[in-house]
Length: 230
Image (cartoon, rainbow, N blue to C red; front, side, top):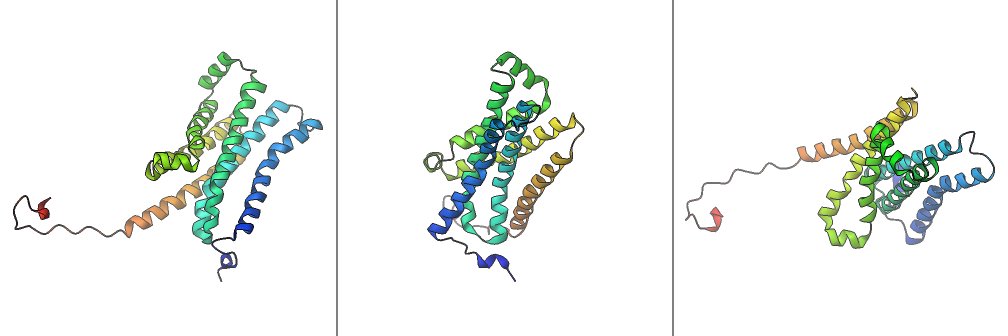
């Protein structure tokens, strides 16, 4: 029995608004939690590291959640899931921006020379910075107006960069934890990303194998300038 059929493929407007509103609040809670913990001395012995790790972790979580929308749509048949993808992606950009801001402001207090040297010296920072830079044009072009301006195909090509961003994000986390010999959580994220990219690859291969092979054109007996030869 298909349990997903109990939820319609297209939700009524009120139901979808409720789902979107609930997801909006849930995605904001980790950010609000930092303020609550900060006001109650709950950030631990190293508040800066706590804030940086929390913001970075939620950036990666929301990025993977964004990538999970399409496979979930294939699995469940719920078309309304696709309408939540943009919000999740923008939340990933929001947390990524807060992560970078905390690093620049709280951790280094706008010491640009030290920041540049740190990014060049430490591979995990190089990877993380590259991921964030690639994420910026995706956020800027996330509006319907930008989709129309770029054209659907060009917009899709640009937003395929999310796959590279996710890989860079996982590698950023991996190398950060590698220095501390603590790869349990990075391994989980790497496996999740592997599944999300793997199902896309399998679907693409399956669809490619079903494409009809074009028949060889029959010899033409007409003139060289006839439509059959064009």
